[in-house]
Length: 209
Length: 209
Image (cartoon, rainbow over all chains, first blue to last red; front, side, top):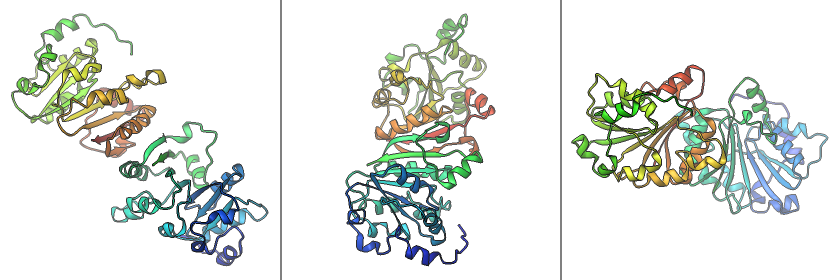
């Protein structure tokens, strides 16, 4: 993905109360940040934030953290919150490759929404459902491991179903055409809204381990 | 499925050299029928036979057995072979619910093509990928268990991916849009040909245990 630089993004992120800057210091103690021990849901690649902001608004008794490596994208999420107070939402501006250094046995549910498909074989290890990434997630989950994935990329989804089940995850829920299922509870990402309007099939799987 | 009765089907099937009538007597010794110990591939619900006849024609060193419970359908497969000699192909006119009484540790690969989806929950046990059926298959496989499934029924496919992986099968190959993959080796069933022309998405999975 080529991104346009957004002037002032770094500063705005650094100054936002929604962003956890010293995340490595908080490893294993995010309860302190939220000041409660509610369930903690994590979205990797949170993008412009529509999905996680709507979730946090609808579910005040769940804490949400969104990780996004591009400041020029994360700034769009921050801007959405200019006049909103959501005590159960935070962002981290970091590459998910370092996820195991950020969290320690404290995540209940992990969302992977419309992740980069990295279609070339030699980039397989960069896919967020590769064995390499699944290994990184092992230590971030509280007790049960729970991943919910959505994508419109068929090849990534085929790959992920194999990788997840090969690595011990059990399929809890599966939809090979989410928007035809007419799930009223589905919260769409920006990307999902755009591409489903164009007729793309949206896939969703929920797995547990 | 409501089927039209075909006059003379029973007799024609009884008289065909392609049909194994005393199948329970041959349990565990189908090598004798084929007079060799080549791999044995089984199709449950073989229908009008296009898939298995094309396979048997292309792969003379693999033995094929097609099971079909409806004589009014199986007769169409038999008729296709009126002027053809295929020593590596046989049919059995029987309900697959009795599969464990028909075979004993002798199947290498099982094909489930466009099986009845049995959409109602109370009919789940009739689906050919239900835990009940997977249990029946346990004793029919030689050593490794190998199932290849195709369907255009999304709900049946979602169900089957969960059921197969829940019951210890590993995904080897998966396509969520087989005909877009342009697989030159794909042999179509009658049903597949008809419904893919109408634009149905065809799903395929190959699993091993």
